[in-house]
Length: 220
Image 1 (cartoon, rainbow, N blue to C red):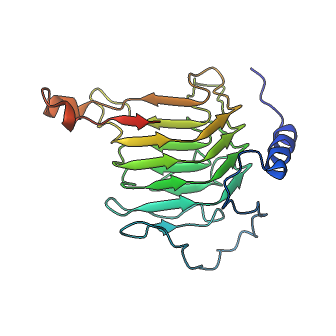
Image 2 (cartoon, one colour):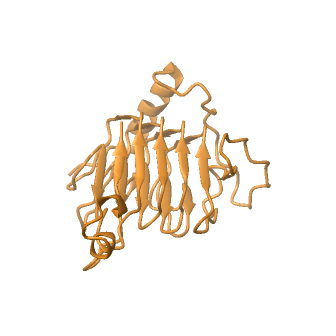
């Protein structure tokens, strides 16, 4: 397995970004991350939701989300992030945008996610664990790669998965809609573009005859 040199991936990302190919109209420009000192607080961008979600800058890898609080990531360019450098909610950051257990009602919309490399699943956007009512919509997800020498990782572009267990808690219900997904790799794993696993488990045991009570993945 050969991992594409970051310089070549960077050149491809910048070429596509500069050409405007399928770039969201509201896309923010790629910015060089500031020094390691904590970033200054900025006012969140207005979001047309009943409750405006928190919006973190790409340079804040430790933004905390809490179960029941909506977390938003909108109109940003996240390019060339590796583990620990992206936007993370509730735990470790193995993806460009990582959404860990408890990030209920999150909204990831109209972002440019390009050239991110991870040793875990979901190099571009990773939903890891149980977070209900998530939305991944209208993003450009290109040239991201999940690769590990020790294990097969999945979903180079987008990964949605509950925690593995004898009976998984599941992933929660998620909608993946209207995204442009191209040129992503999953190494020895499955689903270079999108991978989904461990969506159901405890929900089926609790409601074996009620399909409406089961977690589901919707898309369009």
